[in-house]
Amino acid sequence: MPEKSDGAVSAELARTAWSALEPLHVLVYFTPEAEPGYAGIGLETGTGAAYFASRSAPMGAVGPGPVAAAFYNFNPELVAAVLPGAWASAPPEKVVRARFGIADRALSAVLGPELLGSPGLAEAAELARTAALGAAGHRHGRPLYAGHADLDWPEGGAHLVLWHAATLIREFRGDGHVALLAQAGIDPVEALVTHVAAGPYKAPALRRTRWWSEQDWAAAVDRLAERGLVAAGGDPEAPVFTDAGRELREELERRTDELSVPAFAALGAEGTARLAELAAPLRDAVLAAGLLPGTRKR
Image (cartoon, rainbow, N blue to C red):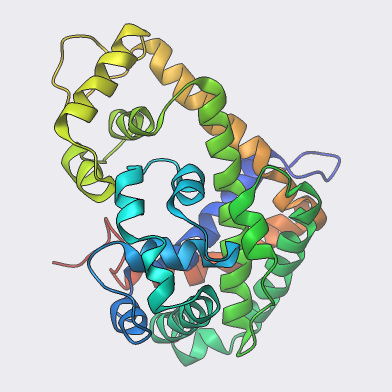
């Protein structure tokens, strides 16, 4: 793992640690525990209400404007269709408790008794908590991190501490990435187009889940083509980066890694590398469960 000789955390090492923790966090969105858990507190399923309410609940009973701004790449009309209405069925405090319960059950099922009770998980949880708390001095301009950082740390086991810390680290990084997209003049739909151009994502799936029309998508492709970032005249469903577009995408990823360093600085390079090492088998167990997109078993 890359480390700086002075013991500071490098951007590359920060990315390595985040990558090891990220599947532990995102499991909460795809576990079979999610739908009955949120339905049980009155949130309508299949509409996006559970996703938007559960991720934004730490910020209070916010309306659609702040949520669309913070989440960035969703059509504001989709957010407005479920917020603030969701809070009438399930106030934020209730949603937060339900989300922790879902994370508890999901991780317990996926990791199993051996990993749940392992010294490695307990050590990873304390390292991740130290990292997440250390990022608090850099919360300004990071609304999702700040909201989640205001929550009490969960009780019920080291796996929940680790999950909450992974959530804080994830939102800290994501807030920084959104700031960079805005600075680069990449709007929400254009950001999704660059995802398709960069990797295995498919345009129809991103449009459907983010509520953008084919016309919205084609217009975003045209805007990026006018800026010389994707090839002009191609299939909008399969945009192709120009050299300039690829360089911009790589620069945004590099700078996102740099902005995420404060989330690990309290650990130093040695502690961050140790966290990544300890989280790796936990990540592998989550991926092996086949619940996350791209890992689902047929």
